Length: 196
Image 1 (cartoon, rainbow, N blue to C red):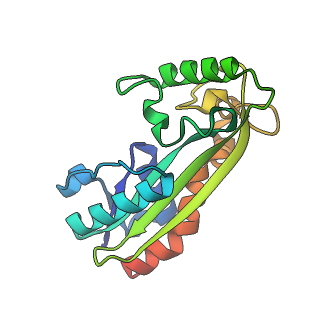
Image 2 (cartoon, rainbow, N blue to C red):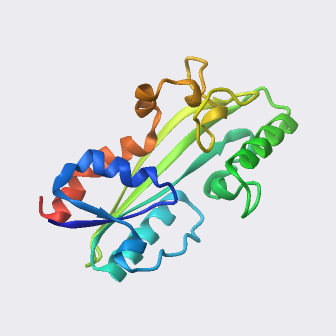
């Protein structure tokens, strides 16, 4: 059974890959594969996903999928962007990040609250073959947190229907998941590299 290394700060990325690939591929993490997680010091989602996938694939000898994702808010000139997970600081919680985001958007005083969730998937082979796949989800920043069981920015990310992602039923959240869309787009290339 071929192994696929997945590098993401979000543990749900592994579950999403298992769901898409089924049981014929073993999905592993850097820790399980005995490799160090590469640093993500790029300035764009695409650069980060490409760098991490390439470095991890070469270090592990495995086909690697890496994700770089976050929230881009127009009135904040693209922030939090690649710093989405540490927007309120390196030890901040998701709630801290959301609170700071709502405060900054409020302070900006703009009527426009447009934003997008971005997910870039980098797929690399140990011999240097590399491609990226990007998906975005457009929305606006809500004026307050709403919903239950939302993670990251889901309680403040409002969709066209006026609901935040955290207000959606669990079965409806897949349609509001840019990572799943990008992974589905990457699937043929992943299978090609795995020889499946």
